Image 1 (tube, helix red, strand yellow):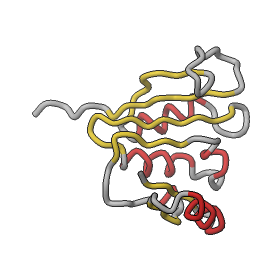
Image 2: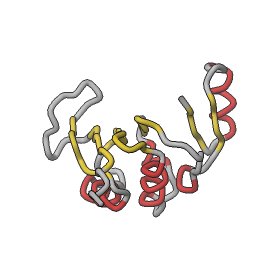
Image 3: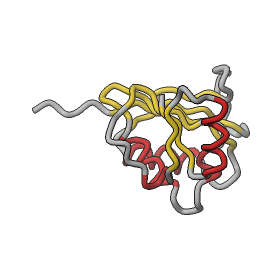
Image 4: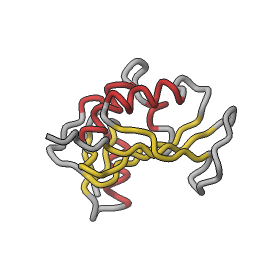
Length: 129
């Protein structure tokens, strides 16, 4: 596991609480860890705390870290700047397609018009050669 945050004080606190984990101070819009993961998670309204206008770059950078059959899972409050249509469009541009969506982290069914969504996007398989 690798945790990432742009705020040095958050990284310091994370290192204090979980010193066994790898923590990286970085801007998600510019993230380049040089490796991929089966699971990339953006929990806790991550997109709502990024610089306005960088949502596409953040999703693209996180998407580059999703392994071949891996998934990107993100949960965020709706109606606060990032809509699901915009989010899905950015995911598609990053080669990720929507697989599942819930209204809570407990997998409650998604109801359009709700105030929260947890979305699972999977890497699109490479076209046959």
